[in-house]
Length: 124
Image (cartoon, rainbow, N blue to C red; front, top):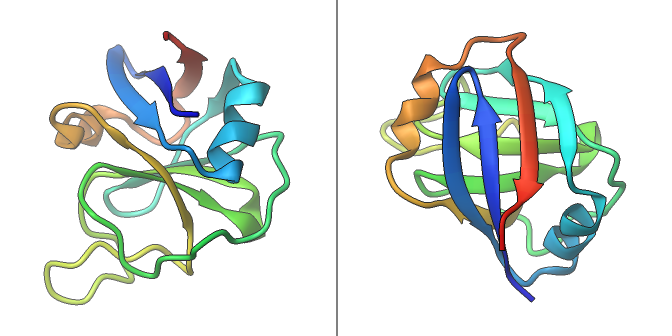
């Protein structure tokens, strides 16, 4: 079952959708989550209280993808190139489970600095 969520960070409130993967369901069940943002290129990531394996892992993702990175038990927001990217691709540090996507323009996350407080909550 898909879930509508809101990501609040650095003065932004951005709507997004979680997909119907098992991992996204586990994350939805753990919401709300509050954490401190880390940045890696044009990616925000932060640890969450969900421990899941890789589900249909992707080594390259689309702009606006939301991912779960099993090695760090981390929620990831992809809004551009990372240090691992080659050319214009968006490449996580290693494979992620794509758990959803940002609604609207994901590049607004460029405003969020490392250390910013971030909250994810269910809206629908």
